[in-house]
Image (tube, rainbow, N blue to C red; front, side, top):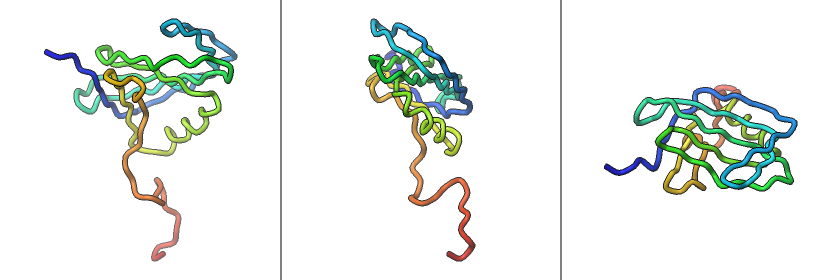
Length: 130
């Protein structure tokens, strides 16, 4: 039986954690963490619990490679601290949102929305008939 290399889950909850500064080793890279958004949800194929930690790093931090453990249903990706507001905005305003754990290509581990028409949002406030 082959090992599962890809898992997709619908993100149902997230938690924002701010740090003054935390230094943590990821596979030999000492990351300087300023924030973390923990995304958790339910697998689309197996209904199991999954987690993707998105670490937001200080501007002077080295960037570790993505960490993916599909067997244990978790992963981590790393972004600049300047991206945290846009990332949290997507979590607050889009639905559904999916986490993709890519053991086959860890650099493709991601958070995505669905394919939606241009110009639409969760609420369309234009008057009827326009």
